[in-house]
Length: 586
Image (tube, rainbow, N blue to C red; front, side):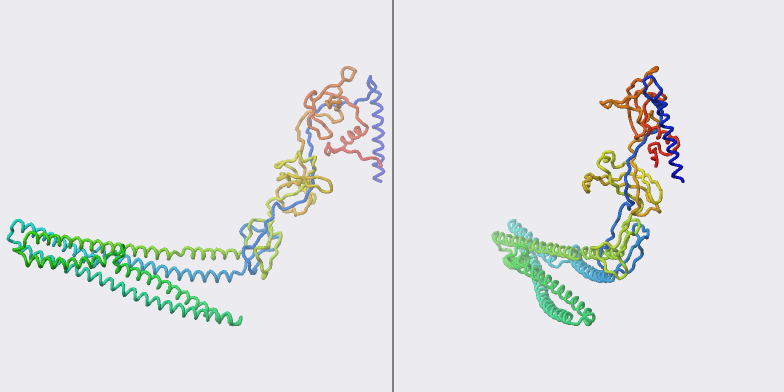
């Protein structure tokens, strides 16, 4: 019944249109029927429409950093999570054991290194303190021998001067010179004895270091054998016995490490003791002439004593030449004593420098930064056994359960960013020139009827060709909504024309010459004539007049019957003027 009424309605409209056309054709001097229309202000807009589907703006895959067994899972698929939220935890017992083991080793190394530094520093401080307080016996003896030889030399000079001046106190001077020579000899003898005692001590130290080295080497070889036996027992043991043997093996390995360290320390001590001893006794060593120099000073002091004794015996009747000879001997004795002192001082300085070097070496060996860095790294790696969300969003995929073995090679979960949504659309090659990243668009969601304001986020540079048809992919971003689901279909509209309140005419009221210049028909008295106009934007139904007409001016054109029917239908519709259509009669 409804279809019949519609048919009747359209028949009536068609009859009325035909009558109107006949009436119009009967008007005018030229016999041509025109419809009058006035240029009016209106909005002109047009858009391109594209289709696509709702997607999350981005997906982030979650990869564990370590391989382990899943201990517990804190989320489910579809849960909303925030960045840093725990997704699941892994079994970290093995890593915690490694941290404890490394921590114990670092503590042991720190303690041992600290002890070595302390011992080396104590030796240096004690030796330097004895020097600062003037308590070094070798240096004291050498200084005393030097002073005595100086006095003997000065006495010999005075004796010579007295003899030359006929001083009657030559005998007394000779006695004094003899006493001084005796004292110089005693000092030189003491210095020589002290140096010899130091050489003996260094020899004893070397012998002790050699014995310790042999003992350490024997202990190392014995421990190597014990450790090798423990390792062999562990390797040959059944799986259920290895746990019981593992502690013994570890203990023997630690003992082996201690024995190795003892051997290395013994080797170093032996080398140092040997070097010190050889430096002390090697007279040809330019760096350590102290032993030979002090011995030479001792011999010279002895000679000086003998000369002084002879001078004393000959005092009173000694001639000038003998006193001069005595003076020369005393001078030589002083030079030798001074050389001995300088040699001892050089040895003392070198010993102090050697002890300082030992302190520096001990401090360098005590640097356990690498061990601490390794321990810190192991502690930090414990965080890898707690897997967290790298970003906020929805858990769209969860591929793990408690007890599963996971690794960094496979994604365990996917976090979808629902803070904004996107749709991927296809743009034909004829429309692509009007589409650019940053264009504002309107997104219509078909399933919910919602409308969102969005933006063209990106446009492909190259076309995709499918079955001979080229199109360009583009991503559209728009705000998220709780009711939206991935996969929902959308229509994306990109406005290409949007002119507000412009002078416009129906498109059919504008005609064109062969050169594509536009014109309209206007009335001049009883005649119709062309008037050139400049057109602007068009939405397909109306066209903007940018020049040639003012608002309210009338133009005349010959519409088609369909156009008249569309005009009537337009008056009855309140919809979009651009989409006025005539339903064909059935």
